[in-house]
Length: 448
Image (tube, rainbow, N blue to C red; front, side, top):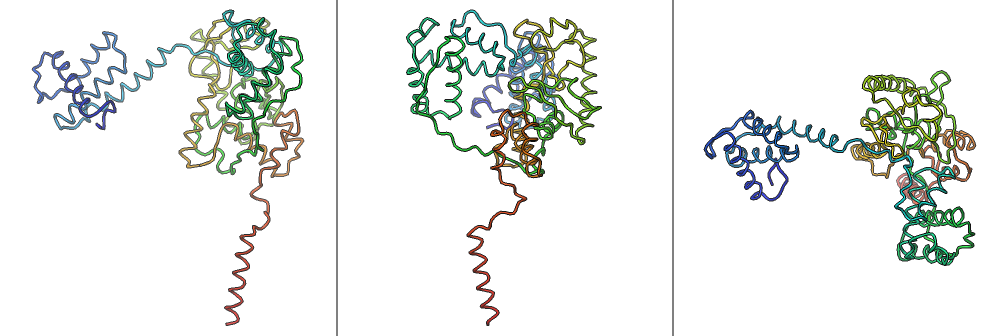
């Protein structure tokens, strides 16, 4: 394979190398002589003509790669002169990709209910929103309801007249036996159907005796203090510090708005939490300077948006109607803003939304690979570390529960099962045997 192109076999690459060389020669009215030493300027002129004809950047990159292959394999000369063109075209490709995609869509805000969906699905969406559940929960429940409807060949609400708790029981058992799903997946399906029966059908689901998927005891992954933030850079490092320093969920950190930072009292208010609860957490002293710098840079971006007439932010519930100008106010802006504008699925308006959670996951994955860690690490691992390290330091478990925002102490108690590496562990029988053997050997040597 050519070191400059990864498309096809070497024969195919040489074929395209000759094709692009001939087209370049024709463009410059030159004879198709393989000895012609075309320059970077010759290539640039040809690329511009192709650009003016509407050829996208990724196709123009193929031209550069083909001419680099020709220079290397046919003319057997250095391609250093063409490398800057290759680097520049990569930048153009990235710019075109963002431009062609246009504004992204805010995917953590519920849009208008699609009237083309089955009436049963529409009814579940309305019921879940009336309950105040998060949009992520709505999407998960709708997915499980659709799967149940597909399996039972149901198309509308009227079809549920003949559906009983036995159908639900069989569906859950099938998931466990034939689907071999995780226990959490089966539980989510159960709760989705329970909500549907209770809130939409107004019926008691009854006692479900489904075969359950096995759910083992969960012991969270916990890192050493020195492993926690290694490899993270820029805004992603600040987010990781927040996750570890405050025990936040990734959704809570990304949803922080400028007004949620209380530098005077050294605390942070977490509003968009699970079950729509709010809580206050201390702002770590070592994080104050980083957060202050990021808040200042956020102000600069907001002033730019104001000057461009694009300053706007997504506001939940009816706040945009109650405070018509709040979407342009700095205090309501997301702290960790996305570089791209996003479209509100409810109104169609463009906003400066927060970073997508997948972008943090991607950077975290790169940092983990770069560090050589073999543990399974996600954004939630930082929250596990926060709780476990607090517990090892002697913090009362009730206080940890409050800081994490857990409704039930049992959820917090999972961290008591994480072994503290600093605590004295009972001696392994293997180590005890080794010590005994060493003592016997030492006694024999002394006796000799």
